[in-house]
Length: 478
Ligand SMILES: Cc1cc2nc3c(=O)[nH]c(=O)nc-3n(C[C@H](O)[C@H](O)[C@H](O)COP(=O)(O)OP(=O)(O)OC[C@H]3O[C@@H](n4cnc5c(N)ncnc54)[C@H](O)[C@@H]3O)c2cc1C
Ligand SMILES: NC(=O)c1ccc[n+]([C@@H]2O[C@H](COP(=O)([O-])OP(=O)(O)OC[C@H]3O[C@@H](n4cnc5c(N)ncnc54)[C@H](O)[C@@H]3O)[C@@H](O)[C@H]2O)c1
Image (tube, rainbow, N blue to C red; front, side, top):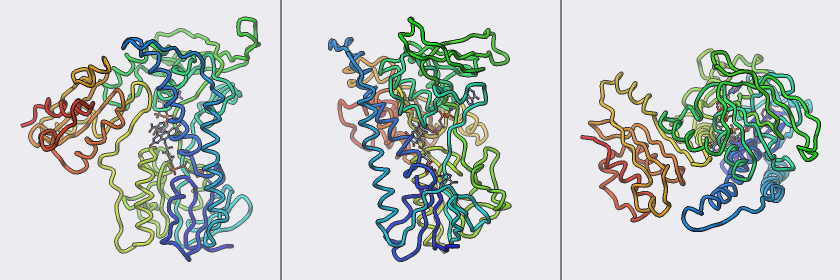
């Protein structure tokens, strides 16, 4: 048995915890997967490295309406893929090497581990690890529904799809959430035919209904979207002259109950299952610990990120990120890691995580960004609190930069309390939505009302930020 001051399970966001403040104290980092976790290896970073060239290709195709007639002649998928992963794999390997050999007080176990007790772990190599403090940062993984053929080599998740050798000519994306929307854009812009399958009507349904509706309107021109279906099975199809020798799969589609659809089938080169992610708690032998699990399988924590047992904090056991968070987002995992980092060393002055205004962005085309409540949530909240809620919608096309772009779909939607002018939610769809939303996140986080925000500062003319300024001015606040 080896005893540590700190044991960290998971090298994603957990890897940010050891710093100079831990010098001289013994730390174990344990990770049975690729060093650096989801965001670096199979998540935020490589996906956005595909999104950027996809944006360039889509932008070139759309430039004709501004008088710039460009063509996307060829997309070198392998060159894009290899550029991305030569960079990422080196960062992962370098990080691993540093943790393995760079610091005398840190031991890296590149092994799977499970709990044997609330304060003890057993690695797959047989090392028993105990620690004064344990941080569980073991993340989440894709969920693939059960159907015959779900393990076919042409059925992928986000973990594998970015490494395929060829850009698929035709791809079926199952799901209508974040990953579906981002890969729908990547594949479609790079030249694949995209079919998207969802069980119920609507895409990106956690967005404000107006944004979700407008988004579907936009992408339905590029993607073949089929609602009311689920995958019944996937099987190989022999290559034929029509498929130019390419192997394909036949996907049987079953109508979901209540839909008027008939059974159907579709042949594609690749299936991407984008049907959500589950926390890795089922791989940790949690039953040996008594830790509380939420219904969705996440570890339950309090606001200080302490893992709960029977509703009470477990001394010296913390969790952060996808394993325990309501948000499967890297900036939330990073925020929670900062909370844990402080609390590990300051037990008398615990800091709480702040999840009041958690923003998100979907890097699809058009880009989408959100912070705070949807209109439906704000109206329900307003009714409960007895406050009046006002909304404003401002088109990008109503501003000078929007004219420059000849933009016809970009939109800012704001939701605020009428009396105080405080923002309750902000929703943006369009060019660089993830950047435009930042001042609105700032206003909400620091309690700035819409009027003061609009008129208490200069807005650069004729920048696209004027659409945010105008949306603020359009709000009918008192
Ligand atoms: C395709 C995709 C795109 C995304 N894009 C974005 C984005 O643009 N912006 C954003 O904010 N978020 C994005 N996310 C979400 C983001 O990646 C995650 O929220 C974040 O990486 C979670 O970090 P984590 O530290 O909780 O877990 P992880 O980074 O997953 O780390 C957990 C680590 O624990 C290890 N582990 C698990 N169980 C064990 C065990 N029993 N023993 C040993 N090791 C174990 C795993 O190998 C893994 O390395 C994306 C996710 C995906 C899948
Ligand atoms: N830009 C970003 O921040 C970003 C990008 C990608 C992923 N992520 C994170 O990763 C998480 C996982 O992404 P995701 O797109 O897999 O999940 P998601 O929850 O966003 O979407 C899952 C989709 O799959 C559907 N679905 C669920 N089970 C199904 C089934 N059995 N059959 C058919 N459809 C089914 C859901 O209805 C939904 O449309 C996201 O929730 C997000 O937190 C973030």
